[in-house]
Length: 179
Image 1: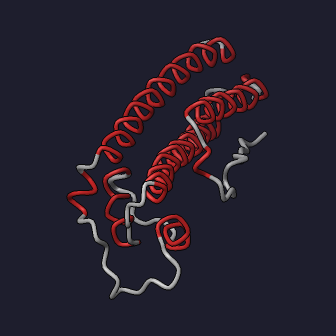
Image 2: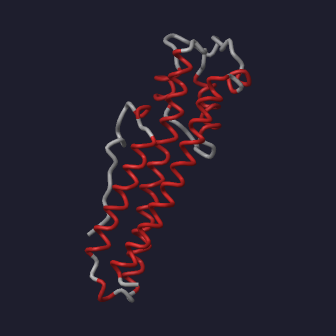
Image 3: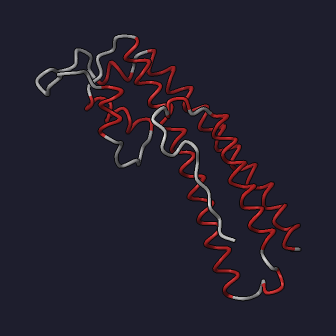
């Protein structure tokens, strides 16, 4: 049995509704699926190279699924900030949005231009129409600080949840495999 997992959030257009509770639920589903796969393994040949290769591959797939869930969580907080900024009449350009994304999600190479235009763009805006607010003022605004603090707290809680779930899984794996 192969580890197959596809999030219901993968192809959604309303990712801003993805919350910490959704992340936690998704991590639990990932580890439950992993537990099912482990339980189906015939342990008789657990010393073979194929078994170890399979377990390494399985660990990589679980890591990939958990990483994707974390990216969705980060993206949802970023999109909620953009929506709140728009509702509070902050004039954010797509360029500003890209730079703010690097603060929310350092290391992330790119975000869909379509998503940025949808959440930060204005109809008929051109490059000649500059934003009235500077990026520094925007990043020091109360709105940004509140959203970033909420994001940071959720990210820490998500990391703690993932660690605790992983540790619980390690115990369960030892029981199943008889280690």
